[in-house]
Length: 287
Image (cartoon, rainbow, N blue to C red; front, side, top):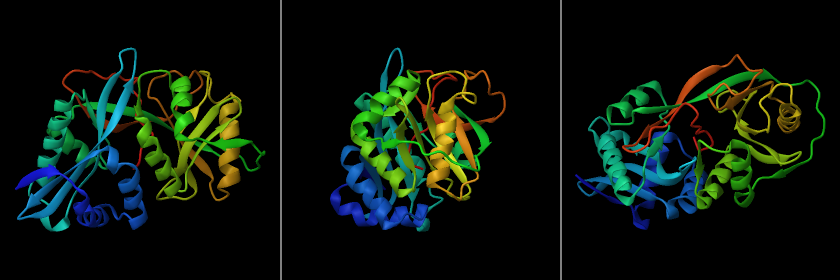
């Protein structure tokens, strides 16, 4: 067994493993390969000269009073014919160790299932990030709201303005990829009314639900303030089949009119130098 950094000649095999593991379309993999891969490090496990497992580290930033740089562990997968042999564990451990050697202070990842949460915790991802989920109905009628698309050059400052600190952000180079992913997922990233914004997409399993991943609003009262009203109108106009939204918020109790909603595990972090607290917010990413 050998672990190395992927090269352009490995593209076809990596694309096949992604497709077999995630059901990824050719368009989705091409989006990753053109927008994220050139600025990331993708590691491959070779057995008898054949790629059997893959993992990618994407640069990430943690915005706080003391900012830090880290990585997002992404696209971990193993060819179905080679599962159960520990290849994923080895490539994850190798990739994270290498990232820490480069000076990254943390690695964050989003396990896709409860079983994977247990797996990642067993290999050192022992800090949990949470988010609050609130289900809300959409209005039956809509009002036309003026919007403009968020691009990578204005999404960075607008997120910083509303989230302020204790959140994870991407290097500017990667926003093109994640915004491209939103487009692939038939989602939206829009600015409206005094620089407020929404980021989200239709739920992958239920097209009557819209997953509102981020809602940029300036006050602690979210339900009584018009930001949510504007967002609901934008969603209803663009997605007539949607009946409700799942609104995802930072887990801390900073909204004085929200008491309901469930707090759910969302991501895990491995770090030897940083302790992340309950305010740390990680949400906007490619599934």
